[in-house]
View 1: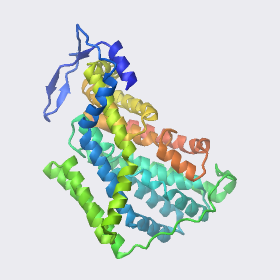
View 2: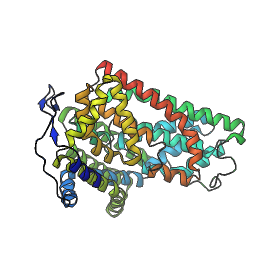
View 3: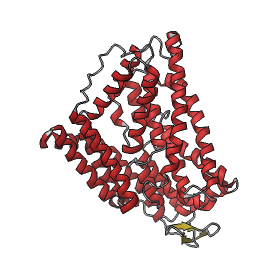
View 4: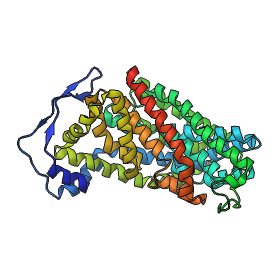
Length: 442
């Protein structure tokens, strides 16, 4: 925020002319940027007065995030998610290849739809114990989890914390363009699984080649017991699936957004709690704890919106867009899309929160896309790739560092394991962005 305020004093004010496109969205017109003759300087106290304005402006997203956090906590409290994972482990426990694939797939689906991330941390010890019992190691276990969750974020189709926020800022219909991301999910998961399984087979053949050989700290901890996949837990899982289907139908056919989706997840909270027999008090307690866990995310959303408001008030938002768009326009839309991915990847180190990054960068990237011939849907996709994939490696990602700490994996060992995969995924996603430009993905 302070840096944004200082930039308003340094950079010239200016703006592009805008017009309404065929989809009814306001887009900037290339080549129309004009610097203002006179400049009004924001008062230093603006850094404080903008905060309540930003929170008020982003209140819909903030409250939706808190509701999602509470709803997921109640679903988790029912034991349905734990029971499903336990069933997978007991079913595929003697065949590690399918077990790792379906576990990775499950994490990817949960992240792509519900935006789950922090909820995975308790599963770290479970997966480590499971993999060690199958003659693999902790890196195999955590690789299965982190690769799945990050790919899920990279190709999210319903994720309320990244996709819906980014599309809202970019002026796109919620969940639009899902078909292309679903198509990309399969090769991305194939690349990710191949990397993890190749490493796992090496460790099974020669344990001394494990990157954490001799330093695993908690492989002897007893894994938590799983609840049984009973009629109640199956019913909760079915209710969750039905809720996700209703989300898709509501958005596609009836134009639902934050208010309606928030109401739906509140309904899911009550239905799941009643099915599991939690009682009103336990439901309320779980909901409150779940919402509290996402308070940090909610605050980041408000402060991230403050940055954009400062640039808007200082009339430098379009100036920054013009500066960034000029070099990207020179290389053509295909390479410009790849350049946007690189920018988002670097920014993820400084803004690891997906919601925060969307609110900071999409006000810039959406109009940049207009200027360089890249659709706003592709701008959102570049954001998703940069946010999702870089979460595998940036040490500022609290979820990653929490999981590594729980599994006693030194960061340098994790870096050696994940960096080759990250490079392969970035190359694939760069090619995917070029294809998206060529086919006119919108």
